[in-house]
Structures are given as C-alpha cells and as structure tokens.
Length: 69
Image 1 (tube, rainbow, N blue to C red):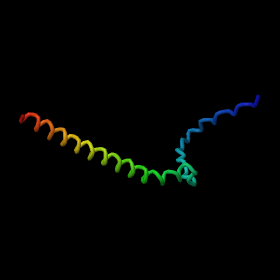
Image 2 (image 1 turned 120 degrees about the horizontal axis):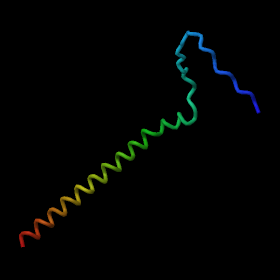
Image 3 (image 1 turned 180 degrees about the horizontal axis):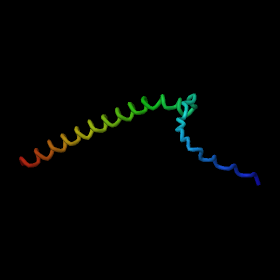
Image 4 (image 1 turned 180 degrees about the vertical axis):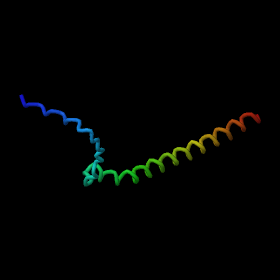
C-alpha cells in the first residue's frame, strides 16, 4: 500500500490560491453548438404555440356557431 502524504503544516500564512484558467477541453468546444440548438428549440416552441393558438381560435369559432343554433 502506498504511504499517504501528510497534510501541510499550518504556518500561519494563509494564502488563497486561485485556479488558473486552462486551455479549453473538447467538451468546452462543444458548447459553441448550443446556441444553434437553443434557437431550433425556441423556433419549435413558437411553432407549437402558434398551432395551439390557431386550434384554440378554431374551437372557439365552432363553439360560438353551435350556440347560435
């Protein structure tokens, strides 16, 4: 079994080390495709919303015409 490293001793000097930015990984490069997918999903959402509005207007027209008779 490998020996465990001892934790660093508290010297009284507490320094905050901020992580340095690294080169983008391949998964980070895939994020550039996200806006196109988001635009597509938004377009589908708007198309479905428009279809539902049209169906609601048609159902309202049918309901009103049935009440007249």
